[in-house]
Length: 68
Image (tube, rainbow, N blue to C red; front, side):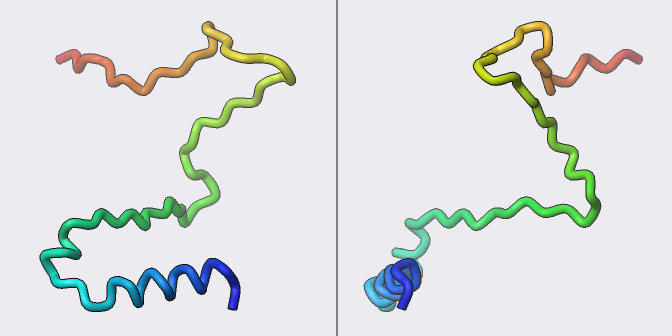
């Protein structure tokens, strides 16, 4: 059996008799980002080899004030 599968099975056996209260002490995160279109709206940055931070090209997602 693959190692990851064995470890998951071992984890399940160890916690098989936990109460609902004990399970409420755990945080599970199985979020997965998926998109039905080819555009996932992510901002991608390509840098030259050895290039670090180029301040004039920084992008901010801070919303601007609403003008009425």
